[in-house]
Amino acid sequence: MNACARLRARAFAATYDRLNAAAERTVMGQRRAELLTAAHSVVVEIGTGTGANLPHYDAAQVQHLLLTEPDPYMRQRLERKIGDAVPRLREAAEVVDGSAEHIDLPDASADVVVSTLVLCSVGDAAVSAAEAVRVLKPGGQLLVLEHVGSESASVRRWQDRLTPIQRRVAGGCHLNRDTVMELRRAGLETGGVKRWELGGAFGRLMPIVEGAVRKPAV
Ligand SMILES: C[S@@+](CC[C@H](N)C(=O)[O-])C[C@H]1O[C@@H](n2cnc3c(N)ncnc32)[C@H](O)[C@@H]1O
Image (cartoon, rainbow, N blue to C red):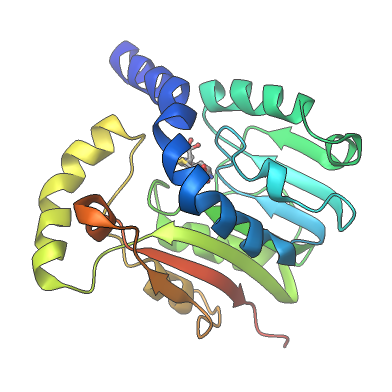
């Protein structure tokens, strides 16, 4: 990472929680909470960032929570937030420097993988989806809350135009990824995914997909 990229990464991590605070309070926090009711036993979260999901895990359901995050500035904030978590979650949590494309776990070892606002930013969404499938037990679930490419052609053109800027200012984030298609191609059952939008122009540029996608049982 060169000095300029390091500065951008540092600024992104430092402002992330503040920039998202209103959306978290009004909508996203509730969506995260509902999604994560399905997180249990051995859970891997990819691209954990500053730890926005931490308050929403049910500590009584989670035995091991592997929190992977490749960005050191995000990890610093994550470590601090773990310090504020309830003792049982603190004991279950382990933070590692790792990417979604390579999760340091054996095949079929996780009950649940969590990906919220991450597959837009990973270097390779197809490899990341395949890696989630690899580590999941048969019948295990990938819980997703991701913003994706629009189904509207005109909005999609705007997403394509704005993605180069978005990538620079928002940690490599793409506005235009076909994330559900990538998940389906990786072999996950995506029938239960819901699409919704936050209000306004910003919401149209960032339509959300949300739900549990399952690795087939056999
Ligand atoms: C928009 S933030 C989302 C953070 C958090 N998941 C949330 O819901 O608030 C995207 C995160 O993905 C991480 N990321 C970027 N590339 C990644 C990769 N290849 N593998 C895993 N995480 C990655 C970034 O460092 C950042 O923390």
